[in-house]
Length: 152
Image 1 (cartoon, one colour):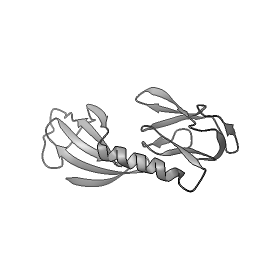
Image 2 (cartoon, helix red, strand yellow):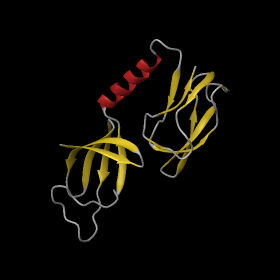
Image 3 (cartoon, helix red, strand yellow):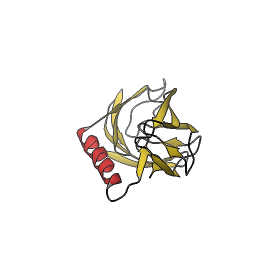
Image 4 (cartoon, helix red, strand yellow):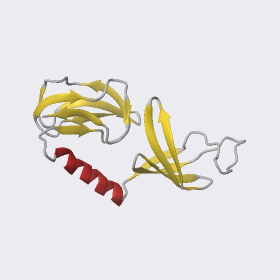
C-alpha cells in the first residue's frame, strides 16, 4: 500500500493505492474508494511506480467505513449549532452559485450547480433558512463532501 499527497489545481488530495495490477487499481482519494481502469500507451510498461496514461474508467465505490464516516460527519455537523452545511455529493466543478450571504432559502431550492462527468447537477438546500456563508466560487474544482454553502 502506497500513500501520496497530491496538489492538483491548488487542491490537496490524500491518495492511497490499495491494490494495482496491469489493468486496474483500487485507490482511496480523501477517504473515498475508487476502482480505476488503467490504460498504457504502446511504450509504457508496468514497473513499480508505473507510467500511467489517463485512467480508462473511474467508478466510485461506497465502502461500509465510508458510509459510517459520512454519517458521523453529517451528525457532527449539526451538533451544538443550528448552522448546516450543504455538501457536494460528488467531485466536480462549480458552474453557478445561485445565492449570496443573507439570502433566505427554502428546503429543495437550488443553491448551486455542479458539473460532474459532463452533467450538471442541481445542488439543493436541505432545509429552509438564511445563507450564512458561501464556501466556493464559480469555476472551483471541489471534491466530494466539500462544503458549498452554510444555512442558519
